[in-house]
Amino acid sequence: MSDDKSLIELEKQHTVLVENLKKALLFGQESFIRCGAILSEIKSKQTYLSEDAAHQWTWEDFIARPDLPFPGRTPQSRRRVADALIRVFKVFKEKFNLDTEELASIGWTKLDLLAPVVDKLEKKEDVNDWLDKARDLTVPDLAMEISGKEPEIGANLTCKHENAYQIWYCPDCNARSKNDLRKHGTQGV
Image 1 (cartoon, rainbow, N blue to C red):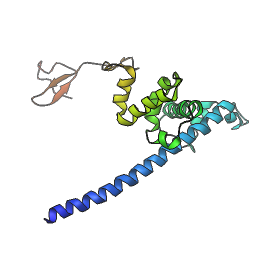
Image 2 (tube, one colour):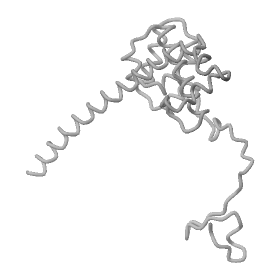
Image 3 (cartoon, helix red, strand yellow):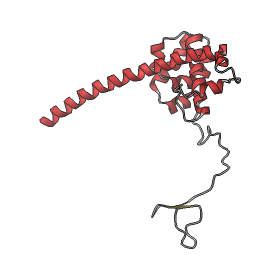
Image 4 (tube, helix red, strand yellow):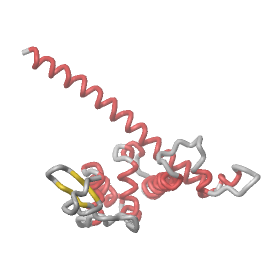
């Protein structure tokens, strides 16, 4: 009986923690949407040009500033995030004037996936259909829904695979090697 009480107490604690997590995540997503509005204005008005009188600043220079905590390890990934936030703001807030909290509940990653599709739409009802799908689907499932088909493995890769090689694998000992494991007693890597 005490196990049942422990489990009930654990479930109550978990419910409170999950609700707090949802609130924190929602707050973060609302911030990303507001960031998209600010970034949109900075980019469109090119206010970043005033950063340094000694040299001509670019959008990339601005996004790479170390005091701007954009997600991403590289300048390119940070720029992709900034551009995605702008895209989300322009399509969902500027064009369709949708509620920030509603958008935040979906998340900017899914909204960025939807932006090209939604941008082509005219009616808000059609947008709502896509938002409903985004709420219910995972990111990969939403991407498949948008494409209308199952993607081929590796279809979204942009790598030219210049350094690719085949690998030999032995399921008996888990050895792996670039060389044929059956020849000359080759050791795995």
